[in-house]
Length: 176
Image 1 (cartoon, one colour):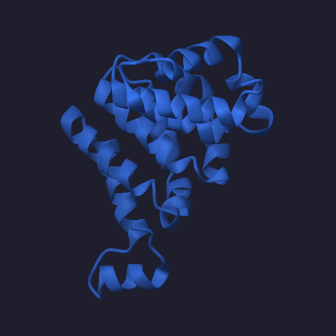
Image 2: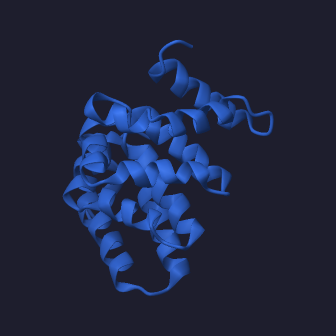
């Protein structure tokens, strides 16, 4: 799961593709295709790489976080889901969270709270948990956002919504 240089060298082998090069190839494929299904698969694949701290520097160098944010603006709900999933996976790292916030990603993540897709909402709740710090906290803790998260915390329809929303509220909202 979590990789280091030694383990990566063992897994890649002498003739394998180095991780940074492989991720660059995925980004290039995404940029060069017009096929929506291919884009979905590529973004899902990139999002799976976003959970591993070994990949964080590569993701920033290759502007993958910005690619995820771009996906959130697409009409294709799968691209939105995989884009916010990648943000959620990556933003546990403060440097990645800073990139997301500095690139104007907070309104996009907050917008995902209103998605009809359950996974998209779950990923948005998880991402906001990690993004709610420092100067960005004020933007996230606007009354309308907190009210929506409180609604998810009280829901009976989704245990994951309730658990993620309660974790967010416990960590970031005073007077609970």
